[in-house]
Image (cartoon, rainbow, N blue to C red; front, side, top):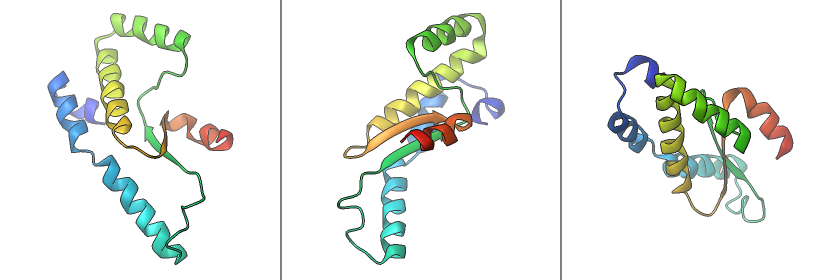
Length: 115
């Protein structure tokens, strides 16, 4: 929605992504689960994945990435999608100690089935 309602620039994308506190969201989620389960060690032996879900199309493999890049050359708006994806991936990678996935909302159910 950010891309639809803003005069987009690369700087504005970076500034918007910096506002996202992904580590804080993870910490809060873990805290809530720990409180609800009343088990302070509920995640000690349990593998989990941090999933960042977006409505932006996300590349899945090299061929799709190439197609996306070619499409980006043809359409200016695609450039903003690519920059948003790159910035969000970079922000997500700042979180350590947990497996991470970045997925388009249309692919979320499939991701959950395959985790």
